[in-house]
Amino acid sequence: MVIEASAGEATRELLVQPPADVASTKEGVHLALEMPGAVSESISVTVEEDILTVRADRQGLPEEYRVLRRESSPGAYARSFRLSKDLAREGLVADFRLGVLTVAIPRAEHTIPRRIEVRTDN
Amino acid sequence: MELIPTRGWGSGRSLQRQINRLFDGFFTDTGFPTAWGREAWAPALDVAETEEHVTVTAEIPGIDPKELSVTVTGDVLTIEGEKRSEREDEGKSFHLVERTYGSFRRSISLPGTVDPSRVEASGKDGILTVRLAKREETKPKTIDVTVS
Image (cartoon, rainbow over all chains, first blue to last red; front, side, top):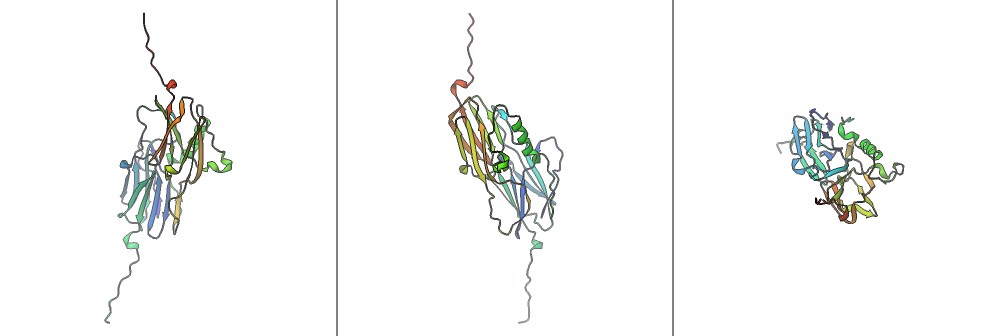
């Protein structure tokens, strides 16, 4: 289970929290964040203790452009989530495609039922 | 399993969009009214210009730009498409659904300075960019002043 943590640092930088879908399957949790216009090389997905943080810079308009109308929210993307104990902190896979960042978080090893073989005298 | 996300700037997005539409001067948005359900979700549009071009950009995360319909009729640019969820929902239980889906259509009036026959559209990282060239006669020209 993934629980939302608050946005965290109060900086003067304008930040946008990307909308997220969070779903779980028996393999783990699947997170999808809408980050259109994110600079793909700047996307960072980090896990520190229980917190998963996603950040990315936004593509800006080149200098020579004059804005006539703006509906999109300006600002870099940032959002954090709290990972529950049953989720792994390693082995996460992140993919950025068509402006959507997906993060697959597997279940922690210790939560996966393991069958132990019984040795007998046969 | 209740999730109460704390939302900051991002949550005001659709309200901001509505306010922007109220203050429309130059551009008129001729999208379908909400009552019909077509405008349940529509991409945010930004418009910018240089001396040579006017660009309209739309945020279309999760949509393949090749599946969009971008048309210019007279002085109206229309962008139409559909956002579908990417994966099958087999065995998935959702804890949070903030992304919006569905078909959309947005139209925007173009300023008189553009030449509707010179349009290019391209998509990258969830942004559709429609670039319209300005008509020659509308581009700024410097006039030399002769002093006698």
